[in-house]
Image (cartoon, rainbow, N blue to C red; front, side):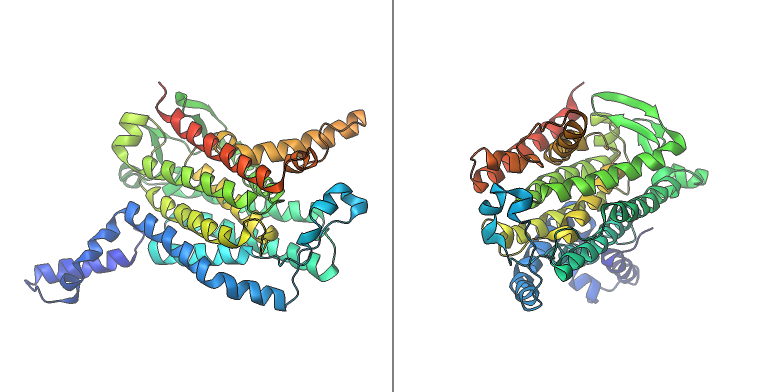
Length: 404
Protein backbone atom coordinates (compact mmCIF):
# COMPACT_ATOMS: atom_id res chain seq x y z
CA UNK A 1 0.00 0.00 0.00
CA UNK A 2 2.91 2.34 0.69
CA UNK A 3 5.44 1.81 -2.16
CA UNK A 4 9.21 1.92 -1.81
CA UNK A 5 12.29 1.17 -3.91
CA UNK A 6 12.00 -2.41 -2.68
CA UNK A 7 8.45 -2.68 -4.06
CA UNK A 8 9.69 -1.42 -7.43
CA UNK A 9 12.44 -4.06 -7.49
CA UNK A 10 10.05 -6.81 -6.33
CA UNK A 11 7.60 -6.00 -9.14
CA UNK A 12 10.42 -6.17 -11.71
CA UNK A 13 11.78 -9.40 -10.18
CA UNK A 14 8.38 -11.14 -10.32
CA UNK A 15 7.88 -9.96 -13.90
CA UNK A 16 11.25 -11.41 -14.95
CA UNK A 17 10.51 -14.64 -13.09
CA UNK A 18 7.13 -14.99 -14.85
CA UNK A 19 8.84 -14.41 -18.22
CA UNK A 20 11.46 -17.06 -17.46
CA UNK A 21 14.30 -14.52 -17.69
CA UNK A 22 17.35 -14.82 -15.44
CA UNK A 23 19.57 -12.14 -16.97
CA UNK A 24 17.47 -9.05 -16.18
CA UNK A 25 18.55 -6.28 -13.83
CA UNK A 26 16.24 -7.45 -11.03
CA UNK A 27 17.91 -10.87 -10.94
CA UNK A 28 21.33 -9.23 -11.09
CA UNK A 29 20.51 -7.10 -8.05
CA UNK A 30 18.76 -9.86 -6.10
CA UNK A 31 20.42 -8.62 -2.90
CA UNK A 32 17.67 -5.97 -2.91
CA UNK A 33 15.59 -8.64 -1.20
CA UNK A 34 17.24 -7.44 2.02
CA UNK A 35 15.21 -4.27 1.70
CA UNK A 36 12.03 -6.07 2.74
CA UNK A 37 13.31 -6.31 6.33
CA UNK A 38 12.72 -3.23 8.54
CA UNK A 39 15.71 -4.22 10.69
CA UNK A 40 18.12 -3.94 7.76
CA UNK A 41 16.65 -0.67 6.57
CA UNK A 42 16.56 0.77 10.09
CA UNK A 43 20.25 0.01 10.63
CA UNK A 44 21.05 1.42 7.18
CA UNK A 45 19.03 4.57 7.88
CA UNK A 46 20.87 5.10 11.17
CA UNK A 47 24.27 4.66 9.53
CA UNK A 48 23.32 6.90 6.60
CA UNK A 49 22.08 9.68 8.90
CA UNK A 50 25.24 9.38 11.00
CA UNK A 51 27.53 9.65 7.97
CA UNK A 52 25.55 12.51 6.42
CA UNK A 53 25.75 14.50 9.65
CA UNK A 54 29.43 13.73 10.07
CA UNK A 55 30.31 14.73 6.49
CA UNK A 56 28.10 17.82 6.30
CA UNK A 57 28.87 19.01 9.83
CA UNK A 58 32.10 20.97 9.19
CA UNK A 59 30.63 22.76 6.17
CA UNK A 60 27.43 23.66 7.99
CA UNK A 61 29.36 24.93 11.02
CA UNK A 62 31.61 27.09 8.82
CA UNK A 63 28.55 28.50 7.07
CA UNK A 64 26.84 29.31 10.36
CA UNK A 65 29.99 31.06 11.57
CA UNK A 66 30.30 33.04 8.33
CA UNK A 67 26.69 34.16 8.71
CA UNK A 68 27.52 35.22 12.30
CA UNK A 69 24.73 33.06 13.72
CA UNK A 70 26.26 32.86 17.19
CA UNK A 71 24.23 31.75 20.21
CA UNK A 72 23.27 34.69 22.48
CA UNK A 73 24.19 33.98 26.12
CA UNK A 74 22.23 35.39 29.04
CA UNK A 75 24.02 38.17 30.89
CA UNK A 76 25.42 38.03 34.42
CA UNK A 77 22.54 40.22 35.57
CA UNK A 78 20.15 37.48 34.47
CA UNK A 79 21.91 34.31 35.62
CA UNK A 80 24.71 35.57 37.93
CA UNK A 81 27.28 32.77 38.52
CA UNK A 82 26.08 30.72 35.56
CA UNK A 83 27.26 33.48 33.23
CA UNK A 84 30.82 32.86 34.44
CA UNK A 85 30.53 29.12 33.83
CA UNK A 86 29.12 29.55 30.33
CA UNK A 87 31.05 32.64 29.27
CA UNK A 88 33.22 30.62 26.88
CA UNK A 89 30.15 29.61 24.85
CA UNK A 90 29.59 33.12 23.52
CA UNK A 91 29.75 33.13 19.73
CA UNK A 92 29.28 29.37 19.31
CA UNK A 93 27.07 28.95 16.22
CA UNK A 94 23.47 27.87 16.77
CA UNK A 95 20.77 26.49 14.43
CA UNK A 96 22.78 23.26 14.13
CA UNK A 97 19.47 21.43 14.29
CA UNK A 98 19.28 21.83 10.52
CA UNK A 99 21.98 19.13 10.38
CA UNK A 100 19.79 16.69 12.28
CA UNK A 101 16.66 17.58 10.34
CA UNK A 102 18.36 17.24 6.97
CA UNK A 103 20.05 13.94 7.79
CA UNK A 104 16.85 12.39 9.19
CA UNK A 105 14.68 13.43 6.25
CA UNK A 106 17.18 12.30 3.60
CA UNK A 107 17.77 8.96 5.33
CA UNK A 108 14.04 8.43 5.74
CA UNK A 109 13.42 9.08 2.04
CA UNK A 110 16.18 6.63 1.11
CA UNK A 111 15.37 3.76 3.45
CA UNK A 112 11.76 4.01 4.68
CA UNK A 113 8.40 3.99 2.96
CA UNK A 114 7.83 7.77 3.11
CA UNK A 115 4.07 7.44 2.47
CA UNK A 116 3.60 5.19 5.46
CA UNK A 117 1.20 7.18 7.71
CA UNK A 118 3.40 6.91 10.80
CA UNK A 119 6.59 7.89 8.97
CA UNK A 120 4.90 10.76 7.12
CA UNK A 121 3.31 12.06 10.31
CA UNK A 122 6.52 12.01 12.38
CA UNK A 123 8.56 13.53 9.55
CA UNK A 124 6.05 16.33 8.95
CA UNK A 125 5.63 17.10 12.66
CA UNK A 126 9.41 17.16 13.09
CA UNK A 127 9.82 19.48 10.08
CA UNK A 128 7.06 21.86 11.23
CA UNK A 129 8.45 22.10 14.77
CA UNK A 130 11.94 22.54 13.32
CA UNK A 131 10.75 25.42 11.13
CA UNK A 132 9.18 27.10 14.16
CA UNK A 133 12.45 26.64 16.07
CA UNK A 134 14.41 28.05 13.14
CA UNK A 135 12.31 31.22 13.19
CA UNK A 136 12.85 31.50 16.94
CA UNK A 137 16.62 31.02 16.62
CA UNK A 138 16.88 33.53 13.78
CA UNK A 139 15.00 36.16 15.78
CA UNK A 140 17.36 35.65 18.74
CA UNK A 141 20.45 35.98 16.58
CA UNK A 142 19.15 38.94 14.60
CA UNK A 143 18.16 40.89 17.70
CA UNK A 144 21.13 39.66 19.79
CA UNK A 145 18.83 38.60 22.60
CA UNK A 146 17.82 35.34 24.29
CA UNK A 147 14.10 36.13 24.02
CA UNK A 148 13.25 35.14 20.44
CA UNK A 149 9.59 34.61 19.59
CA UNK A 150 7.31 35.40 22.52
CA UNK A 151 6.37 32.39 24.65
CA UNK A 152 2.67 32.78 23.96
CA UNK A 153 3.10 33.00 20.20
CA UNK A 154 5.48 30.03 20.12
CA UNK A 155 3.14 27.97 22.27
CA UNK A 156 0.21 28.87 20.01
CA UNK A 157 2.04 27.66 16.90
CA UNK A 158 3.15 24.51 18.71
CA UNK A 159 -0.47 23.71 19.53
CA UNK A 160 -1.53 24.38 15.93
CA UNK A 161 1.07 21.90 14.68
CA UNK A 162 0.21 19.39 17.40
CA UNK A 163 -3.56 19.61 16.79
CA UNK A 164 -3.08 18.96 13.07
CA UNK A 165 -0.94 15.91 13.89
CA UNK A 166 -3.45 14.71 16.51
CA UNK A 167 -6.37 15.02 14.07
CA UNK A 168 -4.41 13.07 11.45
CA UNK A 169 -3.81 10.26 13.95
CA UNK A 170 -7.44 10.19 15.03
CA UNK A 171 -9.07 10.27 11.59
CA UNK A 172 -6.59 8.32 9.42
CA UNK A 173 -8.12 4.83 8.94
CA UNK A 174 -4.79 2.96 8.80
CA UNK A 175 -3.94 4.44 12.18
CA UNK A 176 -7.25 4.71 14.02
CA UNK A 177 -9.56 2.36 12.14
CA UNK A 178 -12.24 5.08 12.19
CA UNK A 179 -13.99 5.21 8.84
CA UNK A 180 -12.17 2.13 7.52
CA UNK A 181 -14.08 -0.45 5.51
CA UNK A 182 -14.52 -3.97 6.96
CA UNK A 183 -12.00 -5.23 4.38
CA UNK A 184 -9.43 -2.63 5.47
CA UNK A 185 -9.92 -3.58 9.10
CA UNK A 186 -9.54 -7.26 8.23
CA UNK A 187 -6.27 -6.44 6.45
CA UNK A 188 -4.87 -4.84 9.58
CA UNK A 189 -5.92 -1.20 9.44
CA UNK A 190 -5.93 0.33 12.89
CA UNK A 191 -4.66 -1.14 16.16
CA UNK A 192 -5.47 -4.34 17.99
CA UNK A 193 -4.64 -5.55 21.48
CA UNK A 194 -4.33 -9.32 21.54
CA UNK A 195 -7.23 -10.64 19.47
CA UNK A 196 -9.38 -7.53 19.83
CA UNK A 197 -9.52 -4.26 17.85
CA UNK A 198 -8.20 -1.28 19.81
CA UNK A 199 -9.45 2.26 19.44
CA UNK A 200 -6.78 4.89 18.84
CA UNK A 201 -8.38 6.84 21.69
CA UNK A 202 -7.69 4.06 24.21
CA UNK A 203 -4.87 4.70 26.68
CA UNK A 204 -2.62 1.73 27.44
CA UNK A 205 0.22 0.86 29.81
CA UNK A 206 2.33 -2.32 29.61
CA UNK A 207 1.64 -3.36 33.22
CA UNK A 208 -2.01 -3.82 32.21
CA UNK A 209 -3.00 -6.11 29.34
CA UNK A 210 -6.13 -4.07 28.70
CA UNK A 211 -6.84 -0.37 27.97
CA UNK A 212 -6.92 1.84 31.06
CA UNK A 213 -9.58 4.16 29.63
CA UNK A 214 -10.99 5.43 26.35
CA UNK A 215 -10.93 9.20 25.86
CA UNK A 216 -12.87 9.10 22.55
CA UNK A 217 -12.63 12.49 20.80
CA UNK A 218 -11.02 14.06 23.86
CA UNK A 219 -7.89 12.14 22.91
CA UNK A 220 -7.14 14.81 20.28
CA UNK A 221 -6.22 17.56 22.80
CA UNK A 222 -4.49 14.88 24.90
CA UNK A 223 -2.28 13.94 21.93
CA UNK A 224 -1.61 17.63 21.26
CA UNK A 225 -0.57 18.13 24.87
CA UNK A 226 1.92 15.24 24.62
CA UNK A 227 3.52 16.61 21.45
CA UNK A 228 3.77 20.17 22.79
CA UNK A 229 4.95 18.98 26.20
CA UNK A 230 7.65 16.72 24.77
CA UNK A 231 8.81 19.42 22.36
CA UNK A 232 9.21 21.94 25.16
CA UNK A 233 10.77 19.39 27.53
CA UNK A 234 13.56 18.63 25.05
CA UNK A 235 13.99 22.36 24.51
CA UNK A 236 14.45 22.90 28.26
CA UNK A 237 16.94 20.03 28.44
CA UNK A 238 19.07 21.59 25.71
CA UNK A 239 21.12 23.77 28.04
CA UNK A 240 24.46 21.93 28.20
CA UNK A 241 26.74 20.57 25.49
CA UNK A 242 25.28 17.32 24.18
CA UNK A 243 22.83 16.83 27.05
CA UNK A 244 19.59 16.85 25.03
CA UNK A 245 21.23 15.03 22.11
CA UNK A 246 22.39 12.09 24.21
CA UNK A 247 19.06 11.72 25.99
CA UNK A 248 17.18 11.96 22.67
CA UNK A 249 19.28 9.10 21.26
CA UNK A 250 18.36 6.68 24.05
CA UNK A 251 14.68 7.68 23.82
CA UNK A 252 14.58 7.33 20.02
CA UNK A 253 16.24 3.91 20.11
CA UNK A 254 13.80 2.70 22.78
CA UNK A 255 10.78 3.72 20.73
CA UNK A 256 12.36 2.23 17.61
CA UNK A 257 12.46 -1.12 19.43
CA UNK A 258 8.84 -0.68 20.53
CA UNK A 259 7.73 0.20 17.00
CA UNK A 260 9.41 -2.91 15.61
CA UNK A 261 7.90 -5.18 18.28
CA UNK A 262 4.43 -3.65 17.79
CA UNK A 263 4.43 -4.41 14.05
CA UNK A 264 5.22 -8.13 14.58
CA UNK A 265 1.83 -9.81 14.96
CA UNK A 266 2.82 -12.78 17.13
CA UNK A 267 5.21 -10.85 19.39
CA UNK A 268 2.74 -8.01 19.93
CA UNK A 269 -0.51 -9.97 20.27
CA UNK A 270 0.55 -13.31 21.78
CA UNK A 271 3.76 -12.67 23.71
CA UNK A 272 3.88 -9.07 24.93
CA UNK A 273 0.18 -8.23 24.51
CA UNK A 274 0.84 -4.67 23.41
CA UNK A 275 -0.98 -2.57 20.79
CA UNK A 276 -0.26 -4.01 17.34
CA UNK A 277 -0.35 -2.26 13.98
CA UNK A 278 1.25 -3.78 10.85
CA UNK A 279 2.41 -0.39 9.58
CA UNK A 280 4.51 0.44 12.64
CA UNK A 281 7.65 -1.34 11.43
CA UNK A 282 8.47 1.60 9.17
CA UNK A 283 8.50 3.95 12.14
CA UNK A 284 11.55 2.11 13.50
CA UNK A 285 13.41 3.14 10.32
CA UNK A 286 12.61 6.81 10.97
CA UNK A 287 13.61 6.58 14.64
CA UNK A 288 16.90 4.86 13.84
CA UNK A 289 17.60 7.69 11.39
CA UNK A 290 16.92 10.16 14.21
CA UNK A 291 19.28 8.27 16.54
CA UNK A 292 21.99 8.09 13.84
CA UNK A 293 21.71 11.82 13.17
CA UNK A 294 21.92 12.38 16.92
CA UNK A 295 25.16 10.41 17.15
CA UNK A 296 26.58 12.37 14.21
CA UNK A 297 25.57 15.69 15.72
CA UNK A 298 27.03 14.68 19.07
CA UNK A 299 30.41 14.48 17.32
CA UNK A 300 30.34 18.28 17.09
CA UNK A 301 28.02 19.03 20.01
CA UNK A 302 29.95 17.23 22.77
CA UNK A 303 31.78 19.41 25.30
CA UNK A 304 33.21 21.84 24.33
CA UNK A 305 30.53 22.23 21.68
CA UNK A 306 31.42 23.54 18.23
CA UNK A 307 27.74 24.05 17.42
CA UNK A 308 24.41 24.14 19.26
CA UNK A 309 21.24 22.58 17.90
CA UNK A 310 19.16 25.57 19.06
CA UNK A 311 15.39 25.50 19.07
CA UNK A 312 15.64 24.32 15.46
CA UNK A 313 16.80 20.95 16.71
CA UNK A 314 15.28 20.69 20.18
CA UNK A 315 11.70 21.55 19.19
CA UNK A 316 11.95 19.24 16.16
CA UNK A 317 13.34 16.29 18.12
CA UNK A 318 10.80 16.73 20.91
CA UNK A 319 7.94 16.91 18.42
CA UNK A 320 9.15 13.76 16.67
CA UNK A 321 9.56 11.80 19.92
CA UNK A 322 6.17 12.86 21.26
CA UNK A 323 4.51 11.87 17.99
CA UNK A 324 6.35 8.53 17.94
CA UNK A 325 5.13 7.78 21.47
CA UNK A 326 1.54 8.35 20.32
CA UNK A 327 1.99 6.29 17.15
CA UNK A 328 3.19 3.27 19.10
CA UNK A 329 0.30 3.67 21.58
CA UNK A 330 2.84 3.98 24.40
CA UNK A 331 2.17 7.58 25.38
CA UNK A 332 2.42 6.99 29.12
CA UNK A 333 5.74 5.17 28.74
CA UNK A 334 7.26 8.48 27.65
CA UNK A 335 7.20 9.46 31.34
CA UNK A 336 9.68 6.64 32.04
CA UNK A 337 11.66 6.27 28.80
CA UNK A 338 11.94 10.05 28.43
CA UNK A 339 12.30 10.50 32.18
CA UNK A 340 15.15 13.00 31.97
CA UNK A 341 13.06 15.29 29.78
CA UNK A 342 10.15 14.98 32.23
CA UNK A 343 12.47 15.75 35.15
CA UNK A 344 13.80 18.86 33.42
CA UNK A 345 10.32 20.15 32.60
CA UNK A 346 8.95 19.40 36.08
CA UNK A 347 11.85 21.23 37.71
CA UNK A 348 10.86 24.39 35.84
CA UNK A 349 7.17 23.98 36.71
CA UNK A 350 7.94 23.39 40.40
CA UNK A 351 10.40 26.27 40.53
CA UNK A 352 7.99 28.75 38.98
CA UNK A 353 5.04 27.47 41.03
CA UNK A 354 6.98 27.59 44.29
CA UNK A 355 8.23 31.12 43.65
CA UNK A 356 4.78 32.43 42.74
CA UNK A 357 3.02 30.76 45.68
CA UNK A 358 5.67 30.94 48.43
CA UNK A 359 8.18 33.46 47.06
CA UNK A 360 10.81 30.73 47.61
CA UNK A 361 12.86 28.72 45.14
CA UNK A 362 13.23 24.94 45.38
CA UNK A 363 16.39 24.76 43.24
CA UNK A 364 19.35 27.09 42.88
CA UNK A 365 18.25 27.45 39.27
CA UNK A 366 16.02 25.62 36.82
CA UNK A 367 16.06 23.59 34.62
CA UNK A 368 17.58 21.16 37.08
CA UNK A 369 20.85 20.62 35.18
CA UNK A 370 21.80 24.20 36.10
CA UNK A 371 21.00 23.42 39.74
CA UNK A 372 23.69 20.72 39.77
CA UNK A 373 26.14 23.04 38.02
CA UNK A 374 25.67 25.61 40.76
CA UNK A 375 26.18 22.87 43.35
CA UNK A 376 29.70 22.48 41.99
CA UNK A 377 29.35 19.66 39.46
CA UNK A 378 31.46 20.16 36.34
CA UNK A 379 29.46 20.46 33.14
CA UNK A 380 30.79 17.12 31.89
CA UNK A 381 29.72 15.43 35.13
CA UNK A 382 26.17 16.72 34.78
CA UNK A 383 25.96 15.65 31.13
CA UNK A 384 27.35 12.13 31.53
CA UNK A 385 25.35 11.42 34.70
CA UNK A 386 22.15 12.55 32.99
CA UNK A 387 23.02 10.34 30.00
CA UNK A 388 23.47 7.39 32.34
CA UNK A 389 20.13 8.14 33.97
CA UNK A 390 18.46 8.38 30.55
CA UNK A 391 19.88 5.02 29.44
CA UNK A 392 18.85 3.31 32.68
CA UNK A 393 15.32 4.71 32.46
CA UNK A 394 15.05 3.57 28.84
CA UNK A 395 16.17 0.03 29.77
CA UNK A 396 13.79 -0.04 32.73
CA UNK A 397 10.92 1.09 30.50
CA UNK A 398 11.61 -1.67 27.97
CA UNK A 399 11.88 -4.23 30.78
CA UNK A 400 8.29 -3.47 31.83
CA UNK A 401 6.94 -4.99 28.63
CA UNK A 402 7.05 -8.57 29.85
CA UNK A 403 5.87 -8.13 33.43
CA UNK A 404 2.65 -10.13 33.79
